[in-house]
Length: 214
Image (tube, rainbow, N blue to C red; front, top):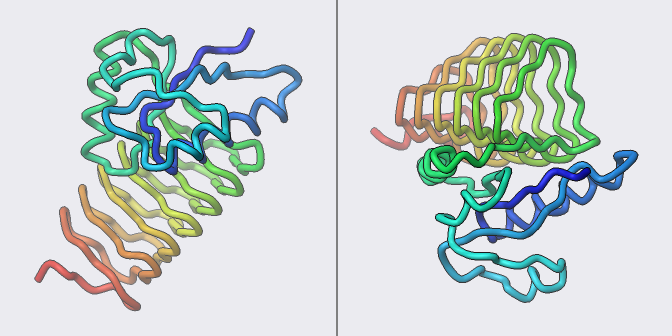
């Protein structure tokens, strides 16, 4: 019997997430997830796109306790953390969603609420915290730790032995030298090349990446 699931967040990534769920169901011998709809506290930016996908906004995010399982499609780390804390207090369970084309190697642990999009690759000895999002084609090398509520953007590469702090955002196409530490709450701009550690709360960008906070 398919497992009841609701998506928190009715924006673009929420629609992408619904497609991931459809593709998981299509690849399984029988459907794994029963996506009942979405929750959002505002007006969806593209209601016509939701209609074409047959998706409905069922109510505000505070209604999450009415559903067995939830997954959060919001990319902002602090908002995602707040939504997850509220949802967990209701007794609803965070689902981990992994696209069927993802490569998950040996000794890889994904925390509850993670979203793994198409063509993401994990190698070996990787620990990922709660509610971490991996967009299309991201890659994670050996001996990596990624803390809770991070976002790893499309085609970003987390090379071996990186330590990625809580609530870090790596936007599209980030590359990184092996063995670095990225501090809690740091933001790395699209296309950046990391060759040195990133301080907690810092924003860096460029090739090579340099701080924009100083």
